[in-house]
Length: 236
Length: 236
DNA sequence: AGAAAATCAAGAGCACTGCTCTCGTTTTAG
DNA sequence: CTAAAACGAGAGCAGTGCTCTTGATTTTCT
Image (spheres, chains in turn blue, red, cyan, orange):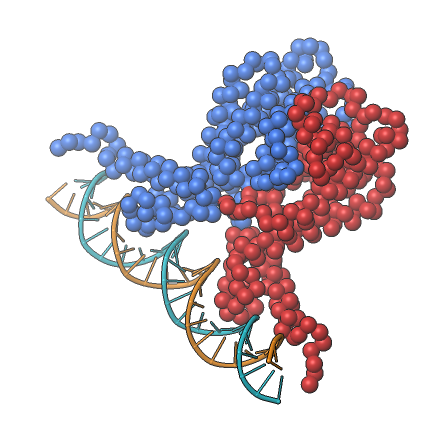
C-alpha cells in the first residue's frame, strides 16, 4: 500500500539527502574555508555514518566540485539578473553593476569566492561540469561588449581611434578566430575586455586576500572608481 | 680540544638544520602544493623523528610563513634586479620588465606563487615578518611611478590632461595622505598604479589558475600586450 | 673543573582525517 | 515472491598535526 508517488521513494530521498549533504558542506565551507571541510564532520552533523556519505559523493574532491559548480552558478545568476535590470544602452552602468555584484557576492561568501578564484587544489583538473557555470559571468561581460560594438556600428563610430597600443598580428588573429566569441567583437575591444575581466577579479582578490591592507582603506570607493575608469576605456 | 669556532657548535648546527628543514619543505611545496606539505614527510626525508621538527618550527603554519617570506623575497629580489638593468628613463620598458619578471617567476614556481597570491589559509593573519618582503614588488612599481612623475615635472607636463575619470574627493584625499606613499606621487597617478598592480596579478593568477583555458592560448603575447597598453596609461 | 640548566632527538600516544571493506537490512525490479 | 541492487553502520587502515615524557648531549655558571 501507499504506492510511492513517482520514481520510487528511494530515488527521492536520495536526491534530498544528496542536496542536504551539499548544503551542510557549504555551511561548513562558509565557516572555515575549504581546508576545514571534513566529510566526517558533515556526516556527524547529519547523524549518519561517515562511510554513508560516500554513497552520495564518492570523494571529498567530488563534493568540492559540486560546491564549485554551485558557487559559479550563484554569482553567475546574480550577475545576469543585476545586468538585466539595467538600461540596455547604459553601458557604463551595466559594467559597474556587474563588478559591484561580483564584489558584493565575494564579500558575502568569501570562502566560496576563494574556492573558485583562489589557488586550485594542487592537481585539480576542472571537470567539464564546472566550465559551463564558470562561463556565466564572463558571458555577461561579453554580451555587454557585443552590445557596445553594435551601438558603435549603428553610430558609424569606429571606436578606438583614441590612442591605444596596436594589437600584435598574432594576437589579433587569435582573438578574431576564437570559436566562442566569434566575429561579433572586434579583437581590439576583446583584448581590452579580457584584461578588464582579469583586472576586476584581481581587485577583488587583492582586497579579499589582504593585499590592500594598509594600502587603501576605502575600498568601496576605489573599486567603483577603477571600474568606472575601466568602463570608459571599454566603451570608447 | 677543537674549540668551536664561534657561538657554539650547537647554535651553528641549529641554524643549518633550520635552513635544511625549510629547504626540503620548499621542495615538497614545489612538488605538491601547500596542501601536500607534511611535517612528517619532511622529517622522514631528513631521517629525523617528526617530533624533532617542532624544535625548529613550532607549527606547520610557522613553517609555511617562513616559506611565504622566502617567496616574497625571491620575487622581490628578482624584480629589483631586473628593474635595475633597465634604462632609468625608459618607463615602458621598466614596467614591462617588472611584469615579465613576476610572471616568469610565477611560471617557475607556481605553488610558491599560489602560496602568496592564492587564497590564504582560512584564519591566516599575515605576521609582521611577511609584510616587509611583500612590499618589495609594489615598492619597485611605486618607485617607477615616482620617476615618471619626476620626469613630468621636469617636462612641465601636467600629465593626465588626457581623458581620465575624475577622482572622487574622498579617494583623492586618502591617496594624497597615505603614510607610505607620501606626496611624491599624485593621487590620480597613484589610483591608476594601484589598479595596474592588481591587474597584473589578476592576469597572472587567471593564467596560472586556469581561468584563461580555452579563452586565449598565446598568453605570452596577450600578457605583453596588456602590460604595454597599461604602461601607456601609466606614463601618460 | 664540576654541577646545574638548557637544549635536544626519539618514541609513544591522542584526536583527527579520507577512504575501503564487510555485513546485515531495506528497497527495487523481474 | 524472489533475485538483485542500493543502502547504513561499523571496523579498520594509513596518514596527519601536535603533545608529552624520557634519556642523552651541550652549554653555562660557579
